[in-house]
Length: 117
Image (cartoon, rainbow, N blue to C red; front, top):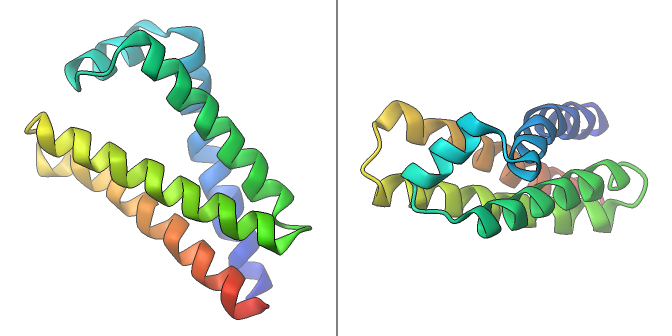
């Protein structure tokens, strides 16, 4: 189970860090995507900070499993919220599947933390 925890943690970190940086730096493409979803620039920055905090928690969770569990649950909630925003914007199913897939990955990581301890 430890290998699966490490793999899912690294996978989520690799996905979330660039997205968070784009949100925090006001990347033009990211701003356009977030605007399409009805998300303000301020909320976009908050989401970016939450993503970075989630990644920090996931990585620290490799040493402190309780923190990894809480971070995985938080990332799951954040990604489910992303799915809700995409549904509200009536985005294509392919677009919605991306955050949904990673929400399942984060939920699986939380479950693995529980099973391992």
